[in-house]
Every structure is written in structure tokens, then in C-alpha cells.
Image (cartoon, rainbow, N blue to C red; front, top):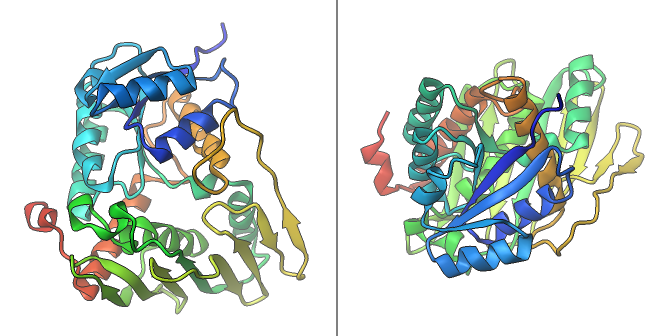
Length: 340
């Protein structure tokens, strides 16, 4: 008998949730079905459901958590809602794919990971980058020794975003470290095999609300490797990640969702994505389909975490984000409440 399709619920009807539902719509309906969506306002959920052909629209997130027809919930809400929504869904027996950052800090992240383990449910931070074919190829080639010993990652991620509320307001868990830095940190960890850095050095620029608008940081890894990263909401940066080894380097262009790679010999290779039913809000968002399929494969196999974005990976990322924020002087109310 063929396995049943994975039944998705969507928590929050914003732009990234639209892109996720749209991307899942490009996968076979025998494997994936979006069956419910919830938003704080019923009108928003109903509008989202009508656009995406979703059968059930819920007012509020508890109704989604209690929906018996939902297997897994994608959390696309603002950063500071991830922890509470994650707990709510896990406590009602739902598997969870949570948009990055997993939570606001390591303390929250540890509690969420612990709850998922206790409930024997799947939980993954939605670091979609790692499921693009070029990321997987990069990892294989590093593991094979093609680049030699990895010595440096240089990565920049910046757009003019200083007027975007989710980035500039502390009340929404704003700042470039959580919004953009998760990507720059994760690509450094990916290149250095997932090991935690021994030392983090960071400096940055904060706004009047006390959140970071620009950050430069170095992650120093065992063996002398360095990840050099920059995030900015003030300037457009080149948005590439270059991994340098003793035998050569590889560059990912638009590194958080790469469809272009410059190889060790200087040649450039490109990739494509399918066409979806609706336009997307963000670049290459159809690639969200890759992480959705990873979730399905893990749940079908009875795995509670992905090897590509493990719980350990998410906790290392959270710890680095906390350390960068500390050095730059960005403090959230939740930091005291969820102190380690």
C-alpha cells in the first residue's frame, strides 16, 4: 500500500507562508497536501485558503494545533512567536517545521528541542538553503577532499531593509543577526563540517530600538579555519559565499538559495526551479519545496530530526547568534527569562 500524503498545516498567513504553500503546490499531491491554515484574523486565513485551495481556515493557532487532519505544521510567524507556537503544536502531537531562527535564543531553542524529543515528534529549523542541490554538492566535494583542507569561508548577506518592521523592531525579535545572520552562520558551519567555533568576534551598528542593522563577525574554528561574515540592513552586499580550501575554492551566488555556482576551475554552473501556480514574494522561493520533501522523508522513515539541519546544528547556530548579539549589545526581554 502506498504511503499517505503528508498533511500540512500553515501557522501564519504572511509572505513566507504564501511562498511555502506555493512551493509545496509544485510537489506531487500524492506526497504533500496543505490541508489547513491559521492566522490571528480569520479573514486573513480565509483569503490565504481561497488563494491556495486549502480546505480549512482557522482563526487563531490553537484551532490549528487541535485539527486532527494535520500531521505537520509549518510555522511562518514572526521570530518572537516561534517558541510559543512550536510548543503549542508539539503539545498537540504535531510535527514541526519552524522558520529560522528556530527561537530568539539558545535557552528557548533548547527547551523546544527537548519538548520535541519528549513528545517523540519531528522538529526542524527551516534552513532551506541546505536542501538546494548546490549545497549538497558542495558538502559532498568537501567530504571527498576536492577542496583540500577548508581554511576560510567568506560570506556577505545584505539588502536595504532598515524600514522593514520584522527587522528593525525589538518587539518582533528584529535585527540582522536573527534575520540574515542565521544564513551566514549556517554556511560557515556547513563548510566546516558542523563543528562549533572556538571563538566568536563581532562588532556592529544598532538602531534606536537597540537592534543590529549591520554586523561583521569572525568565527574561529578548531584547526585554524575562519568564517568571515557580514550582514546588513543598510546596504546591498554581494550576497555570495566563498569556501576556500588548500586546493581551491567554490563560490555560491545568492548563497542562501543558490541557482549559480562558480567551480574550482572558474566555470559557472546554473540550476533551475519549477514554475509554481502563483508568483513568489522572495527570490527562488520555489526551493522551499526541497525542505518540505526532506520533512516528508524524515517523518515517513520515523526520524525525529534531519541529518542536514540537526537539533545540534540549530543549537550551535543559536549559541553563536547569542554571542554575536551580546558583543554587539543587542538584548531581548526573553534573554533574561530563558537564560542558560
